[in-house]
Length: 156
Image 1 (cartoon, rainbow, N blue to C red):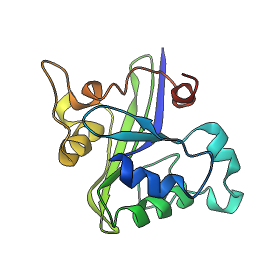
Image 2: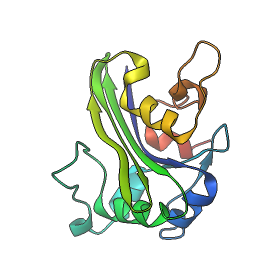
Image 3: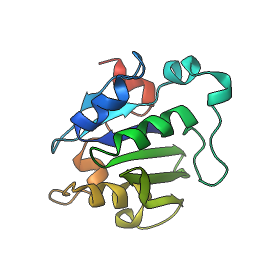
């Protein structure tokens, strides 16, 4: 079974700064005063082709320079993370980075087979203040596994 996610994660007031840059950037409220801005296929297609190239110095396949620039600008008012995950049949990767005040403060990370607490997305979420509940990790605490594809977050 396939799982894909590309998104910005932050407090909703931080994400609002990013979403003002493009009408296709929609905020999904999550738990613990955190929101997600999914980087959907429609949003990626709307970006200028020259702007849709990721930087070689980080391990992301879908972090476009426009999204990164907007996130870095928004990080002046609060922490913001970019997370990316792609799995098929249990094989795949996670990558994540956390920005604050215009610079990376954690990551970038890329991992394929680590214990769940050490996976990149959980590390970044923990640094943002997400508190895992009961016997589940930060990823599941926020409900990031509810949809198996990024685009599905906007179909609810």
